Image (cartoon, rainbow, N blue to C red; front, side):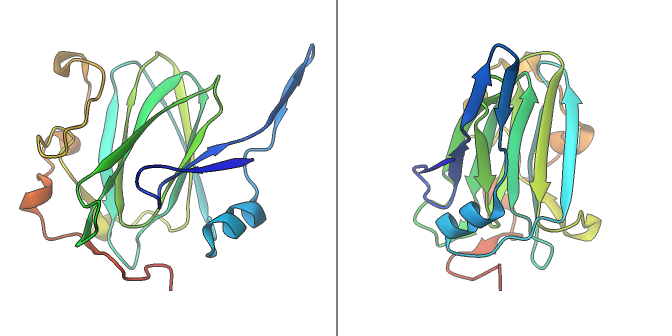
Length: 191
C-alpha cells in the first residue's frame, strides 16, 4: 500500500497494490498495522457501511461531534465518485479548506477522512457502490452537517446544480460560518 498525504496532511490517499492477471485481480484493501504505523496513532474501525447510488446523488457534507466523532476510510467498489473532506477544526491553518479526490472501482484509491472533518461525495456514474469503515457507531444526537453549496468552501462538485439529487436533510444544512458545532484544532479526539 502506498500512503499519500494531501494538501491537508491529516487527509490521506491510500493506493493499494492491485495484483492482476488473466483471471482477474486481487487487492488488499485494508491493513490496520500499516495504516497505524503511517498515521502514528491507533484506529479501531467498528462498522462497515455501503451505499449504492445513481449518477448525481450527493451525500454530505456530514460529520459527528465528539465523543461520537468518526474517522472514515472510504472507497468505491463499482463506479465513480468525487469524494470531499472539509477541515472543520477551528483555528486550523487549513480551516474551511477541502480535499477532493476521484475514487473509482478502477483506480481502487481510498481516502482516510479523520475526525474533525466533514465528508461528502457526489456520484459520477450510475450504479456506483460506495463502501466505508468508521471507528464510531452512528449517533443521531451527534449527527451534523455543513451545506454542500457553501460558497466559502468553493467546492467544485463537477456536475451542474440541476443534476444533483440530495436528501431533504442535506438541502437544509447550515453554512460553515453559521454553526458552532465544530472541532478545535490541536485537540486529540482519539484519546
